[in-house]
Image (cartoon, rainbow, N blue to C red; front, side, top):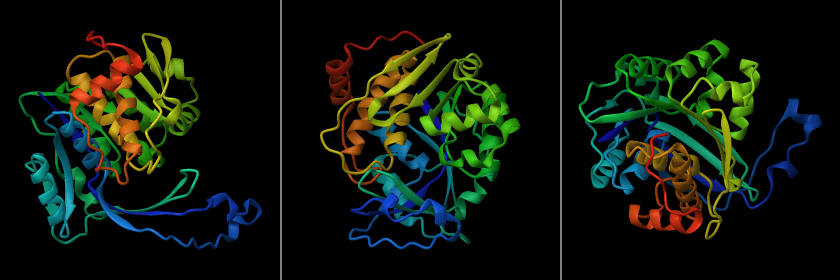
Length: 314
């Protein structure tokens, strides 16, 4: 039993800015923006949405199948995946390109500014969705535009239920693209800003969007998430984190837990409750792939916060 994770593999260069971006960006001067931030900390992490989601799914005991591309500098990432027990069978290495790189700055209010170089990710569409026994579901996470379009179509054609999660790649798609993704997907997961953009672009409301899917999830950070199933909206409160260290990768941790639970035929509501547990766990750690929690500990935290999970399909 496994999930297919289509998305980016990247190195993240992460820095923390102790002030507020808003104090240095003047709205009336935005057309002549020229700012610099003094960043006292700097670290390099393994990242990319596919890598991050696979990390959490593997930590919970899942068997993620990653479909992605690394570059000529990807040796460290290959060793990382090997150490985690995540197979590289469907990961290509583009020797003439660098691995995708994200440069992320986070201010004291957890606002982020990111610069992203796609590098080898631009070849992701050359890796088709594999026909593998045991695949239960998939996710189309942020990736190169053509790869996301192709992988969604290939999963739909194969009858593989999947989550549509455009994330930072949302700007690559127009209304017609989004309608196609929604028609093919079983579930969609957006943060609150992405949801607002999608609804505005499609000219519909959340209830109308949810009616086209098995389930719609809108995450709201520390405030939890909203879940739409069968025309009913349910608000799930978030969990207080032990400490707030770094928001990078929290959404991916949520999605990794979501896949783990849906693989086991949990309801979408309980799957999202587990997602909240992993999001709170991740934000207490620096970097997108350094949080540590077992499935048993995650389930214990979920029971304490929300009660015993049901196992009905959702």
